[in-house]
Image 1 (cartoon, rainbow, N blue to C red):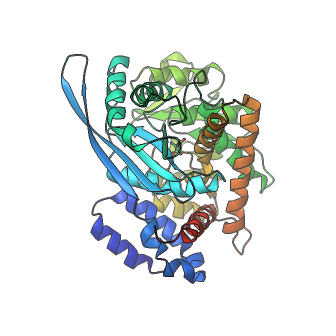
Image 2 (cartoon, protein in one colour):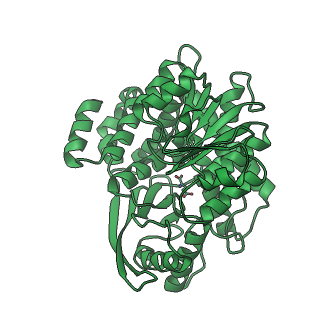
Image 3 (cartoon, rainbow, N blue to C red):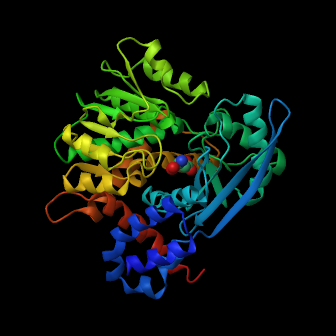
Length: 445
Ligand code: 2IT
């Protein structure tokens, strides 16, 4: 495999799609060796087939705001690869959303979903709609208009969307309501549903919980535990909330959360009712964390800054792609960080990853660490298919088992000669082998 040649070719075909090209390059570099050892992949031209989505659906989403103005957003669904199961992946509503970002997320999702051990292909979708400052009625009208187009392309055995940034329980409710009305069916077409109408217990917590289970396994290899460790978390949404809950339960102290406005440093730890308060912050639709510093005592707010300047044992990016760069990585390393695990998708820039690896800091990528979210979506699909419901302990124990299995796959394929684990390589190789071998089985499709 000639990675440079493939990348040059892709850059020519998709100029300016920086996030997508970044995600592809990372995967190609880490699978190069295993790819070259298996000439059957080259004969079937697996690389050219796997880096392009099966299809990209793009549409216009007109809606009317509370003042009666007609507003237009862009909507997308990128159905990337369904070799191992129906397309599966979240919807992101955020002003930064564009095709490059959804293609990177859809591409990552293929390998992440393969790691979960469950039968799910990779997809992603969303819109440049900005939920910030919108009323419930506006969010509902937007979601209804979005689904009026999307419903034609999805289904419980075809493509099963879920939430991501800007799409939580409220949005899934509005989207599901419209699908149900259009199709006249109550099925498992979306995950992250309300627990009264087909949603799985533990799904809201799952991404954060899974990330912490994964970090626990990484620490175990070094005879370490989470107890007594200080942790910096970025973001304050669903993922950050779940991670803070589980980390605190296991005896660690979370000292930061952040938003687009800056970060808060809480030396006493974000715990108990302070974690509940994260839900209130999110429900306010303002996309800021500063109010946390007025509500609780002894808290500093650092305007316009990222939390990576704080001295901690463990750093967990939980917000958005490329939120931790080379300078942030060097600051964390100088402050003695021992473990960095991306709970956001591609949270670290390539130079940050390189810094961590160069300094032998335990580092694991989002597609392994945050797979607990989509894995629990898979468990929601299972429950919907069986038309029954597991209790929280059952779902949580399956989630935990899946995360340990993913950790095991990373160790198996990422073990280096010096005994340290390259989790980036391990995750990419394990995910790739499963999907590529499935594609070979099915011929040129
Ligand atoms: O990035 C992700 O894995 C998600 N946003 C969850 C996707 C899902 O289908 O639950």
